Image (cartoon, rainbow, N blue to C red; front, top):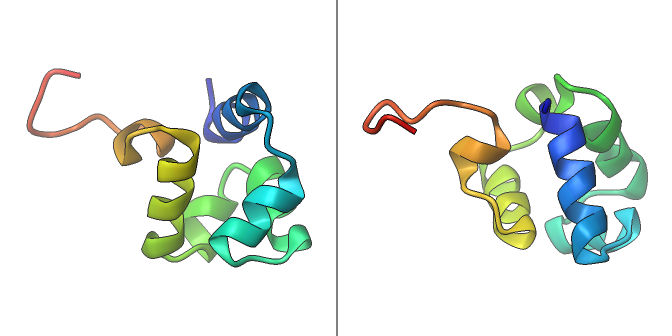
Length: 75
């Protein structure tokens, strides 16, 4: 599952609206929707602090949110 689908799926499963997440991480609704819709937006236009906030809100590990393999484990 790609990052945008992972974010959208988890957000919907938790019952959060796009607007609620946007407000919580301090982004405009338009900026958040770019994250939700464009795969490269999260890594290109969002600070690491906001990515970390998003991962915490969604209950995902940072590596899981970014679809990265942890170099220190086999996960």
